[in-house]
Image 1 (cartoon, rainbow, N blue to C red):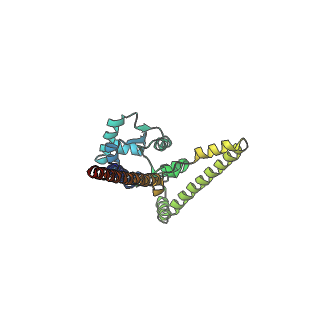
Image 2: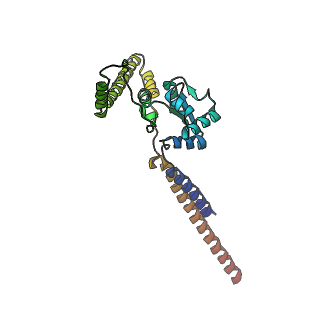
Image 3: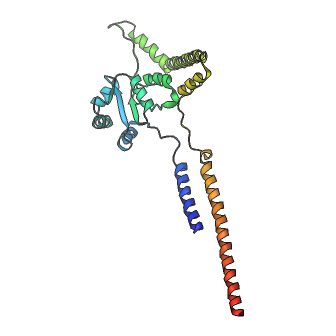
Length: 255
């Protein structure tokens, strides 16, 4: 009986451990619009877009996958619950919820993600590429020259490098402001400082490792050893009863 119970318990724990190890530590990110559509259908994801933005017009007037996403968004959420007034508001929704996606300009998302913490977000692939431009007066004689210069510095990667430097500068300013806040808080009490630091630290997801499952393995080993001792005790008790019966039977025959 104890052996059967031990086998059942071990089988249940093995199934649980297998499911935990097979499950990924991080949720699979959404890379394109087709995966976003599947996530909205199967995992009840919500899609938000900025009001009167290019993404809004693309979904509202587009066909194919764009039209399907727009209709699905309206059916599940409604128009008023799918529109945000700014990209910053949408990024806050993504940070505070686990089933929210935001469709907006890549550079704007990069800027806001740097502000709220990169570890809390996943930026998918580019849906379409848009280029910035400089407004000139109609008939300007040096339009062609400016266009050539802009294309040359863009192809050389100078604009991208300038954008990355701006993001680095933003991160340094954020770290500096955080340090100043920490110094002001430290003047009050050290406990309040530790509490503020813990609250400001971004939440980091960690994949499941064997260290997290050590307790389950120890419990299985302890259960197996304990059941083995009980089984040995039952076997010894059974043999003792058999010997006692044999002894009583021999005494009865001798009389």
